[in-house]
Length: 395
Ligand SMILES: Cc1ncc(COP(=O)(O)O)c(C=O)c1O
Image 1 (cartoon, rainbow, N blue to C red):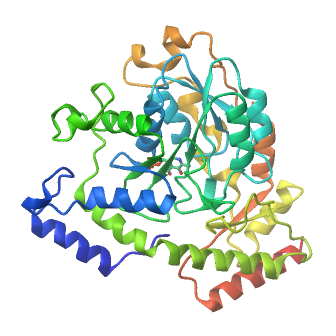
Image 2: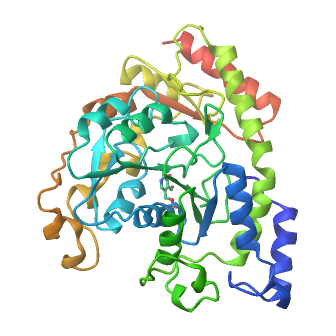
Image 3: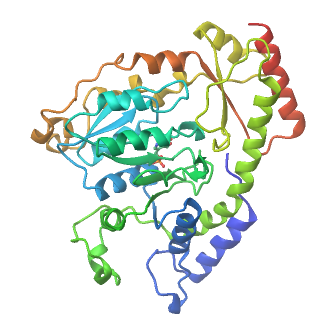
């Protein structure tokens, strides 16, 4: 997905030659501040005050955000039934309980179902911008504000996307990103948290660096220090991602141009309809989502010659009914650290079934994605659009 090359190599070689790979260091002693510089540049790009780069991926970003909000045992967090299992796993890792909600035809969290599922213990909502498709952040924020719950956006598949001209991750109280090998920007692994909230970023910083108590900047931290994890990013990660950031707008522009061509050239053609979009301009253009009125038609379209489509129902751990460790309450290395067994969580909604979000499953069964690629040549784009047109005509 991502583009990578000489720019990343050059920046990494500076870090290697400086022999300063730990993120904390003195610029006067030749430390390059790559992680800190990326954080400043990423915060500016997203349009928020703070960013924190993490080695533990988007999962660590979500965990640090939830921990920053003070969420833990006794709390429920609403997540969509269609997302990578990590969105729900992060909730469990801070000791809270995920409540699984439906998606709607846009493939993203259904604000109506969220409102129905908010209960007395709900503390946060995690809308997921799956496959770079923006969730309806205006409606989700309205529901969240009405019920006084926090929002942490899972932007792990949507680095750089936006909703109504405002970047994904800047709508909620916090946003989390992934830079693993399957994402729009990558350092192989890695993630980030963003927020405007000073208290969230301070606590998230403490949570993700077990050595906070010994850092030179500890005197500037207002929050009480507690012992956290070790999710510190390396300078190499910072160096790679600073260069990836320089490529981001070009990649998004190319993906969006290809997606717009599919929509323009196939719109209204026999057998073709698209998933409604909350914001086609802000969509990252990672996929084109086609909709059908039956699974049989979806499968026929996906497997037609030259289409190379895929059904999200087949995407394994992105569908809640396959989240076995969660459905079966198998969490943590020790029973006392399993949120499902914690006394504080006894009254929470911990009973899941594989059919609890029927609409989500039904939508995933009759949707087909065609994955788009930044570096497709004109002939490849034309051939793929022609194959989709023909497949639609044959339905
Ligand atoms: C929607 C979503 N959330 C969270 C994550 C977790 O990110 P990471 O693998 O970087 O921890 C991913 C990663 O694939 C994801 O796709």
